[in-house]
Length: 262
Image (cartoon, rainbow, N blue to C red):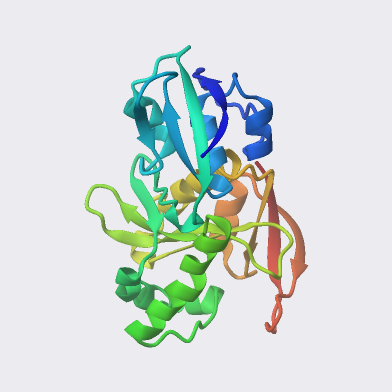
């Protein structure tokens, strides 16, 4: 285990005090708030442990969300903790995003029936395209080769969006890194029955906050078909700006590229 330094707990004021990477974590040892240290370690694929100086282990990598670290440690402003870390597989990161009404969690093979229904919705086929998912086995492969593979490579990917009150699956939303785009982009799709209730906007806003706070992304893009006016309105309502038309490889039509500065 590599000792990274001693960090003092400080209140968070909503601003990004440092870039979320290990190099800056080391450089600012002694002054980083713990909720900044933890996502920095997890984003670069590290397991982490926190201790008060001279005391037994308090909490380690299995805590599900860095937002709970203060409660798990019962830390107070001014407390100091020692941080140690070791390399682990990034697939161990199991972050879940929560908003007042929604939970965004990673897709698993158990979500195959949901994906099979979603990607064959007429609205999906019209605005996103045919993914040739016709059976539950196809859906499992789609999840494994798409979202799950991206979680392993980048630590993020499309997530299932559930309603918190009843765990009803509403759609998907998340960050993607495509080989065909220079920047990370955000994608989302919801069942038509859940349109017009602000769910997609709520999920997009939470995902953009995660892009900034957990992954240190200064810019996120989005693509939308020209006919997808509802997605265009949503993107513009949260601050995306149209930049140009482009044609994705293998497609026979242009899409619109939007940019957002976090």
